[in-house]
Image 1 (cartoon, helix red, strand yellow):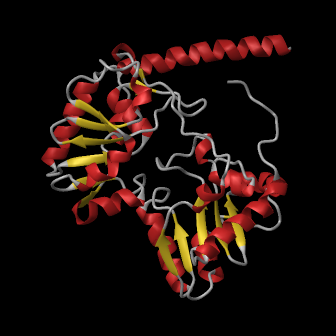
Image 2 (cartoon, rainbow, N blue to C red):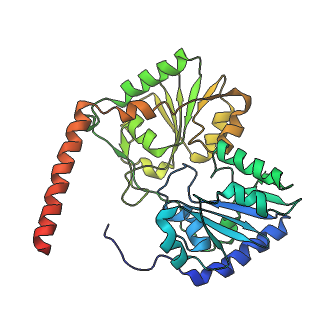
Image 3 (tube, rainbow, N blue to C red):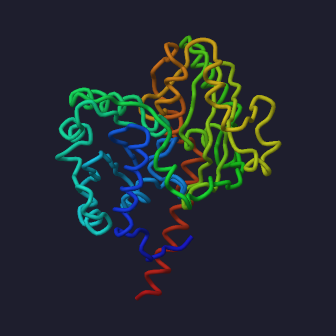
Length: 332
């Protein structure tokens, strides 16, 4: 994919879209709605379908958030985006830096008493929701979960990505998926945990030795999974993506439709490991009192590179370096 220098957003569209969002809020008796940058996988890089912040406000940076109230609205970015946010976002929004004004602090000051401030529980982690809840209560308001209001007004919203899922060769991964699953499952069982619910695509790419094409310039697959203490995995992924990997997983990986994920989490028996920094709030709500908060079990072993992964990194840098030198020689 080549870099395009076409304008990715139009500030002039922001006021009308904010007005449409407020109309939906009024229909539902809501006084505000929170729009984060991330998606249901809590990733920084999102598919076009999940670019809700960019569609609503015009801001296309990789980190940010918006809170829209009935009479005020603000976009929050960090210092990297001082110029970009002024160029892309219309002045119907307050354009604020998170270093000086955090979204929760702004909400505490700006929310009207008695207002119901809504959020999509698929797009926020538990810690973030608790910060927003405390801020809303500090203003005499209430934080409530709801369907995503931006999706209701985004008429030409792109379809969900359906990039083909591809096996990642064991020669490059350095270990089989079965060995990884067995080790991590045994560690969960040793901790007295029945299963772990996994939502980070990079964790699943590592655990299952797979790659995908759902996000431009990012070889991940948008999917969810449950890793059991036995080492077995329930994978929740659109079946269209599975054409190339029917025989890759083996008998201990069972594939299901993504819509079955929450029901499967609710049906788990015993403690369920969740990573508070990455699992959407709605998943924690589905687990309820059985939550065992802890790190994503894939995070540390994924970070500890084996010899094959280190060799692959070195070879990739050699190829990349050669391409850069060729470009610079041509430019010179």
